[in-house]
Image (cartoon, rainbow, N blue to C red; front, top):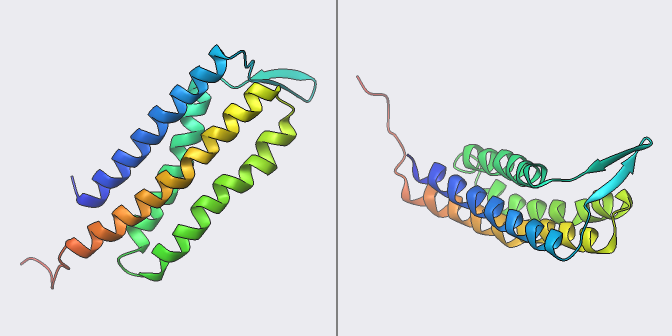
Amino acid sequence: MTRAAGVVAAVVGTAVAVNVVVHLLGRAAGGTFAFVREGVVVEVDTATVAGFTAVPLLVGLVLVAVLGPRRPRSYGLALVVAPLLALVTIASMTIPAGFDAVSTLTLAACHLTLVPLSVVGVLGLRRAAARTPAVAGSAA
C-alpha cells in the first residue's frame, strides 16, 4: 500500500467510525433521524451516515492524492474547500430537511467531524507526497 493510500484509508475509516458513534449517540439521545420527502417519511440510518461520510471524503482525498503531487497548489485549495463543503452542507442539506432538534444537531456534528479530519487527510497526503521519491524514467 502506498503512503497516500494509507492516509486515505486511515482518514476515511476514522471518519466513518466517529460518525457512526455520533449517530448512535444521537439515536440514544432520542433522535428519530426521519424527515419527509415528497410525502414519504425517510429515515437516515447508520449505513446512510457511513456512506455519506465515506463517499465524499474518499472521492475528495483520492482527487487530492492524484492531483497534489502534480499540482502542489491543490493541497492549499483542498484545505479550504473540504472544510467549507462540510460546513455548507449543514446549511444546505441538514437544516432544511426538517429533522427533529436532536437529529439535526447530531447530523450537523457528523458534518463538523469532517472539518478536522479532512484537514488531517490533506496534510497527510502532502507529507506523503513529499516523502515519496519521484520516479525517474521508466523501468526497462
